Image 1 (spheres, rainbow, N blue to C red):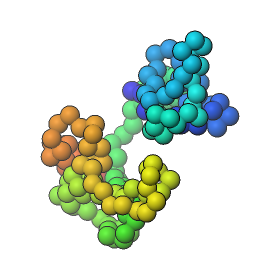
Image 2 (tube, rainbow, N blue to C red):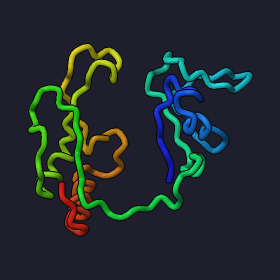
Image 3 (cartoon, one colour):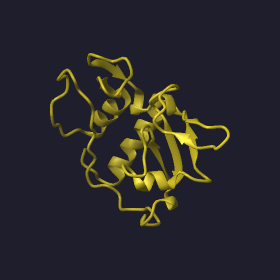
Length: 154
């Protein structure tokens, strides 16, 4: 297992565990660094504000290993609904959970997206369309199978 963290404006003071985890064996994305010293400038936003780092969970001090827990009894799906389209709280069937998951409804809001000044509705299948390898319905089917197999409430 591992972690995939945002690292824009990262510092040892603000996020000591993440800052310390960025070392040999971690992968940095979209960051600017000095080519001579190889020191990363975490404040530099010239490429994008979406700077990331992937690192093994073992790089986090006091991580509980192995990182395996029980199956969830409850699944809570959160979305940024800037327009009040969805009810504040709903209990879903597995079919409804699949539909919500495939739709990936959310909103881009100021402060989280560059150039956004007003809320903007958007859809991203499975809340991660750019990262999907399989068709979204395959992920939704897996979700429904796990919900039913482990009798989780959604």
